[in-house]
Image 1 (cartoon, one colour):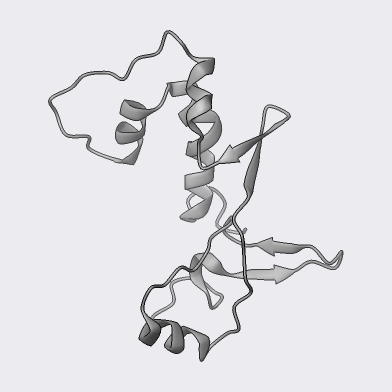
Image 2 (image 1 turned 90 degrees about the vertical axis):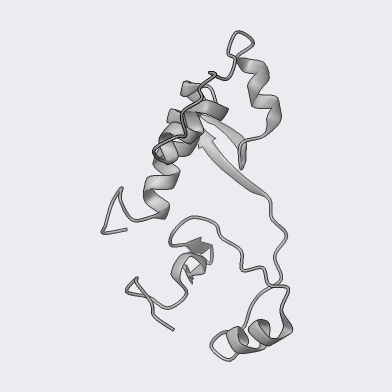
Length: 123
């Protein structure tokens, strides 16, 4: 097993803050596994806590569901997905074909940059 980050657990790594709040280093991630063999292997390295996903992100002072929920599209009634025969060249182009630009900028872009270590390499 090869670990790219300085801590074991990659994107599912967390730690306990002095206040008692569990902090997800790379944003909230869950380890889901349908293979008993892989589950046994992963549990050799760490105990897993049961988790029911209820993720909210703070956008413009309002907590919103994450991942982006369908009701967000009601905020942009005049937006329609652009039509293009060309294949998207990157993640941003793919998102902008499925999301209004404002939703991409406020809810996806910074989250994704932080998740993959491009936003702040010290966090």
